[in-house]
Image (cartoon, rainbow, N blue to C red):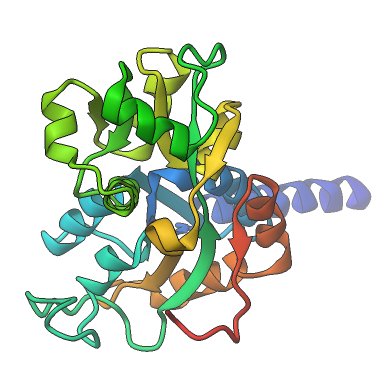
Amino acid sequence: MKKVWMMILALVLATVLCTAAAETPKTEVVVFAAASMTETLTEIEALYEKANPEIDLIFNFDSSGTLKTQIQEGAVCDLFISAGQKQMNQLDITRDEEKNPERLDFVLEESRIDLLENKVALVVPADNPKGIESFDALVTLLKDGDVLMAMGNSDVPVGQYTQKILAFYELNEEELAKAGKITYGSNVKEVTTQVVEGSVDCGVVYGTDAFSAGLGVIDTATAEMCGQVIYPAAVMKNSTVPEAAQAFLDYLRGEEATKIFEGVGFTGIPAETPEK
């Protein structure tokens, strides 16, 4: 009888402990990240939450410009990962007035790092209807031929990089748009979708998005054409869980996460590399 009672007691205790554990609230870490990181961070989320069951990662993926505006307008965000320095600079009080004209102060001091590097890629639909082989060939078509190119809006990093490429080739974006040779997307995923669906002849996206969508990269822009594509990351100053946000950011720079990023074409930036 004593043995039976001990077994019952053990079962009751186990039930109580499980119930208590189930009722323990998790720490929510809200991460605003560039749309081009959707696939990689979704994969990383499962790994991180399995190793840290007390953490609940909540992602908001969109263009860096949209995310920056949401943060500025008071949206809850613990960690921001931008696809461009411009959007992070606009939130960072340590940057000069040229880069942060509104003197916004959202970046937690000393948390900002350069996390990853990406590439700007020229991609085409599976059948490559115009036979485009390079940026040079695209430029000729944009000047003299019949072609429709998809690019990001001017308020998103992939669009800003594309504008630099057009300027490098001395092409007038406004004239090309009026001539019906350019169509736009509000973020890189929209541009990628237009290419995948074949509604355009080509598009300018990130190399990682081309990989995730199964698109072949026809050409890659050089740093001379559009600069380096650096993804800065920082904990936000108004985060209520800065330690948890910093811990996740530290993990993103670690070996396990870096392997996932590099698997789709990102390049990890070593911790000792100074911020650009």
